[in-house]
Length: 83
Image (cartoon, rainbow, N blue to C red; front, side):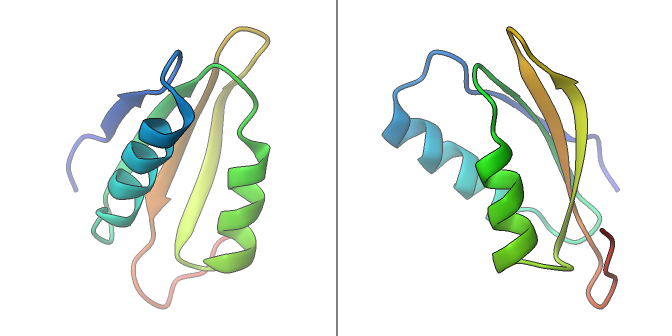
């Protein structure tokens, strides 16, 4: 396991923000993680991961506003599910 990849999305236009976020997210190997700083509530992403990729990622809030929203996403080992 390595240190988490850190990305800051605050202030980025939507298209490059989403491209960077999803490229980083889907590039994670099992056991890897990323920490993200955002300038708005990313709860929609959290719900999307829980729904569309159940058992693949674990989400942990690090800070929930009002200025920054920070979260960590861990890529889980295959076959491991965590709520």
